[in-house]
Amino acid sequence: MNDQSCLAVVLAAGEGTRMKSNLPKVMHSVGGRPLIDAVLESARAGGAERLAVVIGAGADKVRAHLAKGGSTVQVFEQRERLGTAHAALAAREALASHKGPVLVLFGDTPLVRPATISALTDRLNAGADIALLGFETDTPTGYGRLIVNDGRLVAIVEEKDADAATKAIRLCNSGIMAFRSGLLPELLEAIGNANAKGEYYLTDAVAVGTARGLRAEAVIGDEREFVGVNDRSQLAAAEAIFQQRARAEAMAAGVTLVAPETVFFSFDTRLGRDVVVEPNVVFAPGVEVASGVVIRAFSHLEGAKVASGAIIGPYARLRPGADLAENVHVGNFVEIKNARVDPGAKVNHLTYIGDATIGARTNVGAGTITCNYDGFFKHKTVIGADVFVGSNTVMVAPVRVGDNSLTAAGSVITSDVPDGAMAFGRARQEVKEGMGSAKKAELAAKKAAAKSAT
Ligand code: UD1
Ligand code: MG
Image (cartoon, rainbow, N blue to C red):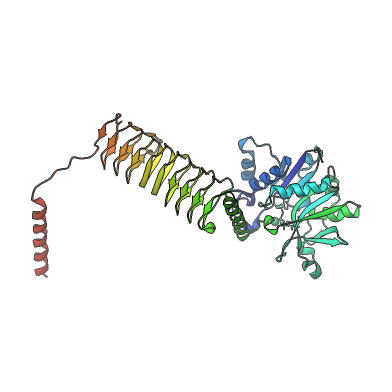
């Protein structure tokens, strides 16, 4: 086994012209995270201890993104776009200082699994000098073709340089390659640009290497892991593959998906055993749901935590910071943001809870609103335990509603309610005997007079 650390160089300097976007290609998302993050995470989980990314000149958004959270990713700039071998050379400094195998990945190929990457570096340990991931496909157009002679990989020919016989080859290059320690810099220096595009192709490392007697091998994997995102329809294709995979994994882990093809996951969605998800539910990033929770149809969850036994929806929206304890019920047309809801509390109908805490067993009536924002600042609403919040209560934050208290329906609560109190924040009802029927008679006469005048 190899005891040297592995460096992964991710090429992401391409212009992504076919995306027709103001956003750099690798910042587009699949499964709720940028393509570049997916590639880096796979490389890391697949055994790369050091990570380097090559970005295009002026790709400030990518640079800023990579710098987030004290990341240790090294960033290099490719000033001119002269091809994938030229791009890899931009990381020359990282290559020169590295002792150990080197992986090269493309920033636009987000679905490769960590195990597939480690299978590739295993080939180096087994004696290959160069190993690459290939796949067989019925739609090879656009991909480099693998040329195999007497069972040996000898070259990769790009689409633009291929004759008709080569174009008929269905064995393609994924773009993911691994090189034995110390080999890549000298191969890159030897690669020329005598091809249809006048570019320096990383893929020529195979022909250059085998001509020197090096051993190049292809590891053949599943086509669906190697979708390259060059335009919006490939982005959608990658998303579809991601979703199929996430649904299958959820079900394999004991989650019931009533209609799997209508449920959408993010890269970090975590669902416990025996969670039941009804149709048309979206898990945006940052959701954690404990076992036994039921998520009814048409609910949208993001950045939310749900404890066991809770029932969410139908038509519920949980926004970032929603933290629901055991056996909480959240019903239809309820939005919860940045709020802790304690065990057994119920918020069942047409309600907005933002920047709040709700105590255990409290019942929040239909149409309740926390007014958390005054146009400049956000304020907090604290609702105690065992409270009965009457329907259509408006709580103007900052405000505190004490334990075991009650608010009358239709109240506007602007000042604190002590424990055990009942608060009426509405005009007192007046009743005028007979006034209703008198008013109706008056209006009926007026309408009859208007009719006879025409
Ligand atoms: C490339 C491969 C092809 C493979 C396919 C798989 C080469 C020459 N061709 O073709 O064999 O089948 O990927 O998807 O490698 N990039 C740079 N700087 C450059 C050029 C490219 O950083 O000067 C980056 C791009 O951002 C991208 C990656 O390299 O992430 C691949 O470039 P792209 O133009 O998408 O190559 P393909 O035509 O897809
Ligand atoms: Mg590509």
